[in-house]
Length: 72
Image (cartoon, rainbow, N blue to C red; front, side, top):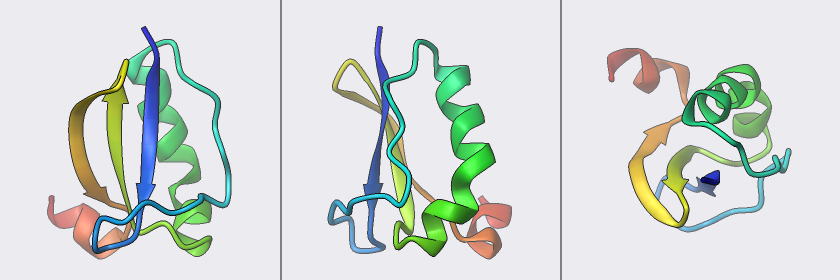
């Protein structure tokens, strides 16, 4: 199984992230990575992310902005 992130602007359009991860072997690995690098991704222009498993959407979009992330 391959877990991947889609990086988006607030309107849902895909954007190139400041950091490009490889595919992840587990959902936990993918979520740990986003937890570690969300600030750099936000500073680089990504405002939200969506998680996929083998091309199928698992959840998202999830905001990278701290005030919105704390609410949800």
